[in-house]
Length: 456
Ligand code: UDX
Image (cartoon, rainbow, N blue to C red):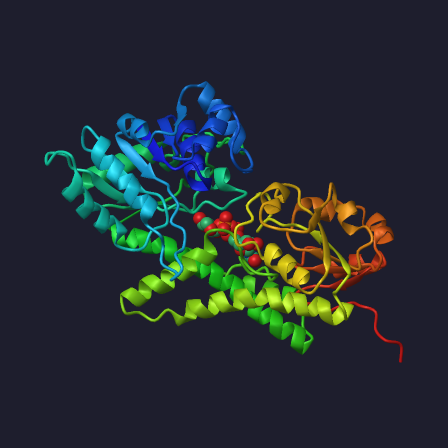
């Protein structure tokens, strides 16, 4: 099938490359001409494992093309995926400007009926709004643009893998014809015949279920999923606070909790909180949406507040240990909001760095991928070539993103470089006993601190 993808961001570019990989002809458009120029020169505008190879392979095969003219993509595709941003407005609502702009271009440019697929995370009843919009602005009354909700559940850092191994494919539509065409688009995944480019294997076992719903329900599934995942994280962080006060170990509590098959172990990792462009904004949007329908989602406001409190708690914990932060050299490992991405949007690490700078500390930082993007957001931070340089001369080393690289460093060398061998583990990525055995002091989250005590 010929497909148009509007938006070449984290979701749009991954969706376009993966749809081409399963055999569709895809034209991907973005209004950012520099992004399109980079894509047409063989690069990609952000780091995402396996995506560069997938884009290059499908560009070479001719199945994937890029343009900065949205109308060119629309004229190519009988199915149009809308993958544009829905950033938060000041009042927490999702900004629908880019969605409306895409809809307007479809009305002006489509020379026949189109299947219009919402991939972006949108407030419930957006699909209904789009259907009304198309009936008003379509260029011919004979055109019928069918709207479908097809939310994505891609995680940054594993987006390609998540596309080929989804837990489910959700499709919200109002006609059997639309459902039939969505089945056609995802057939290689639904019948398990496609080869996953990450594992170079076909889908083992049972292919993913297709969840066929009405549009409103599909739109709600996305917001509900992200909010529930964020709630699990804030829940374990709330428990971590109690563990610190009650002299317990949150990692053991999380293990005991997660073994309950009704709860599950995932998303129970305590730390400095969730970041990224999805959880923070989707939580705010969901609370606002619910309020518009007269529903009280205060629970999610607490989820957000618990998350925001992580930064202050972490800074104060270090301050308690270092006494005075002014003039102290602090090393930082990790800037991205999670490993395997260069994305720093809503990253707790940046908020923590800004707070230490407010206290007068001097920051030297290293991240395997995110320093370029972080350099445009942070000021007076010394960016280092490697983890050792970031530790040299530091009175404390803050481990803020659990990149695998940090768990492979030579800790004895790190200890010899530091002014004070204090490791503050914002993601509980290290084993305290190993750290202590190397001569460090150790502070984790929800764990017993192992620091030098005053001699009696
Ligand atoms: C999320 C959803 O997982 C995905 O389904 C949706 O499509 C987009 O939003 P993403 O934000 O890319 O994906 O990353 P995710 O792995 O969910 O992590 C989000 C944040 O939560 C990160 O900052 C991560 O460090 C944090 N996190 C995650 C925790 O603090 N503890 C955990 O146990 C898991």
